Amino acid sequence: MGRKIEIELKLQIIDKALWETLPKSAWLRGLIVAESAKVETMEATYYDTPSRTLWKADYVFCVRREGTSWMATLKGAGQSGGGLHQRREWNVSLLGPELDSKVFSQMIGADKVVKMLKGQPSLEPLFKTAFTRWSVLVHPQNCSGLLEVVMDKGVISNENKNEDIYEVKIKRKEGTTQDLLAFGAELSRRFPLLLGGKSKYYRGMGLIELPIQNEGKLMVQWPSTAGAFLAEAVGTVLAAQSAYFMKQNAVKEIHDLRVAIRKLRSRLSFATPLYPAEEVQHWKDVLGSWNHRMAGIRELDVLQEEWSTAAEHCGIDSSNSPLTNYFKTQRDKQAGTLDKVIGKGKLTADLLAFWAWSSALGTADELENAWQVYASKRLKQWLKDVCHKAKQVDRTDTTAMHRLRIRGKKARYILERQAQHRSDRDTVRLAAKLQQFQECLGDIHDTDQGLSLLNKLRRGKQDIELIREIAYLVGWQARRSYDAKQRFDTQSTGCRRIVKRWLNGR
Image (cartoon, rainbow, N blue to C red; front, side):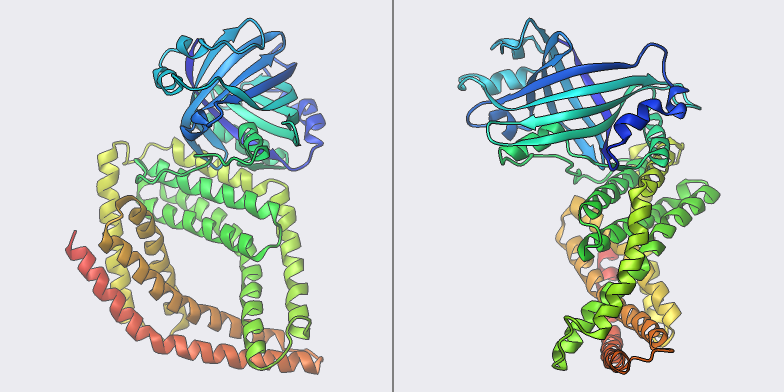
């Protein structure tokens, strides 16, 4: 009838051959605790009331079999982000698969659930899982932790539908969360894995067409430490990576992944003084390399979007035009290379290693109040710096304008996160104004970058129609650049005014 806190890392298998290759890995065999490997046949039936009382309160309840033993398991609301899951769990031994109505009263600390179900109709089955589990205990290198590696394959089913199970989990038995993350990073370097796979319960609820109440939901409260601040952003990148992998080459998904990495880099810059400078620079370079891998694809997507708009304005059918086909060919090449790298689990490994690093270091934010004071001062200084640079910048200097755009974007990302926590009118208004200013700077940067790329594209080209379409788009981009630069002074003045007002109110 014990209660415990379950912490595990959920991984999504890219190559199903992992079921055969992982147990045979010489690297893993060197870490295995003797006699700990086992294979079990498992099954579980998930229950709720007809009105879905437990689902509405974010509880999960099932009766499950492990080998010859039966167990009733209740899981409470927890935290989930990017594949790392933590939630309360109660377990009670049963004599068989029959559900005992008194089972919840045997769970110490589950009084809330007992009251919740009082007077409710009997629980009814929702769906079932049946799978084979291979598991082993490991002692990772260079740490004293004890972890369990679990692989499941089987099926989730209800009366009408079924779905395959094929997943890997790493569970912490002893040691720290850092041990868990570091081992996950090493595993991902050696085998193709993604993070953030959906739980069996999540997928089962999908079969009966009920959404999860809180699956993967990020907390609105401002993170209590710099480590939590960075970890939250890592989880967002991992989720964006999974979404990208499900829809490879999709314009929105690759843009969302690139933005998520950029936001993580902004948070690292925000927390830079709290960590050793050389190590911070290493991680800035690592994260920057991923943004660089996607930069060319994003530039082509922006140009294609602009070409579609310009062509429509000029009465040209761009759906199968030479320039559209050229953009597609170039994009497919770059996206194919990116897909291969992500498909090998390289981004997963880098992100988990970063996560482990940021959670391991002793920093100046050990106390929550110290971090809160630091974050407030840091954001104010960033906003003052943006105002100062915006007032002095030479709008004909593309390099200086780009630097201002980056500074402003970093400050806006942090302010937007604080706006989620504070929700006061002035902070929300400032975040909106900074976004408008950034959109103006973004138009200037995108058009300048686009013009530079288009000028390179037309060099040496022999296709007259392609050259003509490039010329059309060059003219269109030049006009957009001119209009954006004309808006800059107004946007800059308005932004500086509202920043000063916000700072004076703090």
